[in-house]
Length: 412
Figure 1: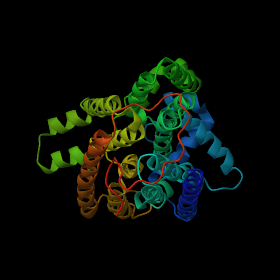
Figure 2 (figure 1 turned 45 degrees about the horizontal axis):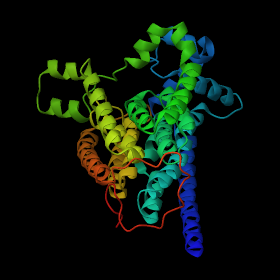
Figure 3 (figure 1 turned 120 degrees about the horizontal axis):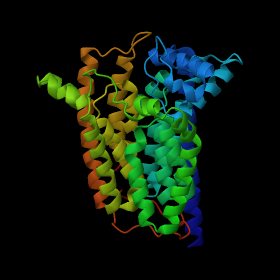
C-alpha cells in the first residue's frame, strides 16, 4: 500500500510539472503579446482611468465625470490596482504591457488551479489536459494577453474560493478570496450565494469562518467607497448593465429574428437582472444538490452568465473558458478554439474591436457550443455522488487515477 501511494504521489508531481510548464509557456506567450502589441481601445481607456485615479484617488473617482472616457464601472480594488500599475509605469515599463499583466498572471495560476480541481474529480490524465488547456487556451491568450481587463483575475479568484472551501477545507481563506473576486470585477457575484450555501451546509464553524473572511475583506475594500460615494458606486458598478449593442447571445438572436425593439430594450435594461437572478438560482440549486462539486458549479454558473448575457464584449468570453475545462476537456477545448478564432478576428485593427459578419456568425456558433457544454456540465454535476464532503477531516491522499470522470466528457 505504501509503495502504491508513493507511486501515485510521484505521478501527481510529474503531472503538476507538465501543467506548470504549460502554464509558464502560456504566460510567456501572453506577455510577449502584451509587450509587442498595442491592444484594443481598453488599453488606452485603462490608461485614462489610471491617470484619473492618480488625480482623484481610487475612492473619489466614482463621482467624477471623466470627459472622453466611458463610465468607470470597476469595483474598488481595481482602482488600487491601477494606482499601483501607474507607479510601476514610472519605472519605464509601458502601461500597455502592465495593464495586461494581471490577467496573464491570473491565467498562469488558473491553469494550476484547474488541474487541482479536476484531479480530485477525474483521472490524472484529464486533469493534465484541462490544466494545460487553460494555459494554452486561444481565447484566454487573446483576451488576457492582447485585450487585458480584469475578467481573468476575477474568474481565477472565484474558482479558487470554491476550491479552498470544499477541496482544501479552508473556509476563512475561501471567504477572503471570494470577496477579492467581486472586488476586482463584479460579475462573479452570481456565484457567491452558492459559496455561502455550501459553507452553511458544512456547519456553523465553517459558515462563521467563511463569513468572517468575506465580510472583513469587503469592509476593508468596499467600506471607504460605500461610506464616501455610495450613490455613485451603486450607479456605476452595481447597476451597470453593459452596452446596448446587439452582438452576442440572446440579444443577437432576438435582433436576427426581428423581435420588437421594445423587447430588446427591456432585456438590455431592467430585464437583464432576471437573467442574473436565473444564473444565481441555478448555482444555488446545484450547490444544494451536490456541494462537493462546488468548483464545477461555480464554473457552470459563470458560463451560464455569459450564455444569458445581454451585453457584448469579446473580453467577456473569458467568463466561461476556465469553467468549461473544469466541466470537461472536450467542452473547454472546443469552446476555447472556436471562440479563440472569434476573438482573433475581432481584434483585427489597432484601436477597436471589429464585429464583422464572420465574427458575428462565429459568435453565434460559439454560443451554441457554450450551451452544449453547460448542458454537459449539469449532467455531470447531477451524476456525481450526492453526499457532502467530510468536513473537518484531513484531506485524503491523492487518489489513484480513475478511468472515467463524473463531470463532463472523458478525455479521448
